[in-house]
Length: 159
Image 1 (cartoon, rainbow, N blue to C red):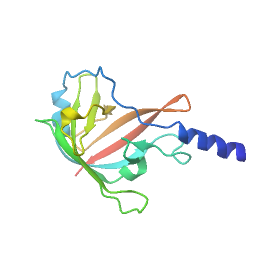
Image 2 (image 1 turned 180 degrees about the horizontal axis):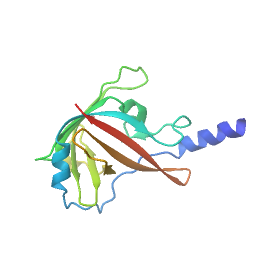
Image 3 (image 1 turned 45 degrees about the horizontal axis):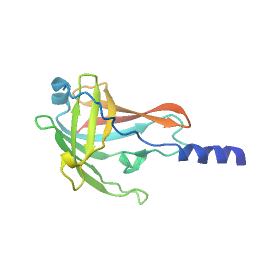
């Protein structure tokens, strides 16, 4: 039992979200961007073994705190906003402007701006965008858990 607990604690220490690399394509997928225009709610976050470890999403908060967060995407200027309005005392409230785009490789590139100008923010996140419909879509993040690649799926529903 102690060995299992130690292994779980060790796994938690190795979990992190990845940041963008410096060479992300900026050739835009305008059609998909237009489909995401509007207001969305992140309705679920799923990943393997989620009962055993926590994932800190976007270097902000535990991934489960993002459930019911609100996201707004403006496609003509690639700006928007995201906000966590959690009723749980374990989660903090957070709100920030964002910049985003979808490139032709199917990557959703996101910068969380906070109190800065977009050009002053040097890091961000690259997630795969999948299953885009008029009413829903998924963002897939890839993380490293103790040397193994795992996917986190963020599911969005249109408001």
